[in-house]
Image 1 (cartoon, rainbow, N blue to C red):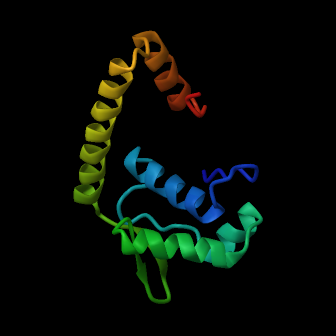
Image 2 (image 1 turned 45 degrees about the vertical axis):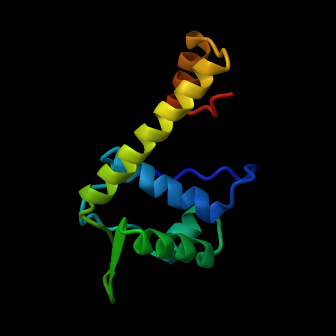
Amino acid sequence: MFAINYQSREPIYEQLYNNVVRLIGMGVLSPHEKLPTVRALAQQLGINPNTVSKSYQMLEQNGYIYSAVGKGSFVADNSAVINGKQEEAKKDLVKALKTASDVGIAKEEVIAAVNDIYFGGDGK
């Protein structure tokens, strides 16, 4: 479920953070669903538990998850947070598309980049 690219320049804790946000946004992780423990996820991914802990702390600070002492970490019921992020992303997308159009990037190139990103590429 969680994918880490060890060759990426993006820090692992950010990759994990972005993975969880993406899975929540897609509805793969449901509100109040229990996340793997820090130790279990670190072992599964072959990374330091402190890295997982840092990601979980950031997710909690930003309202994506919550922790229950002695029970673990859970997906927050955060539809307002997700909706806000989606609206922000849409505004950024419109701005980027206007810029692309203004500098002469063809619609077909934009569509190809979108398809690449949605099918796991980097859009380049």
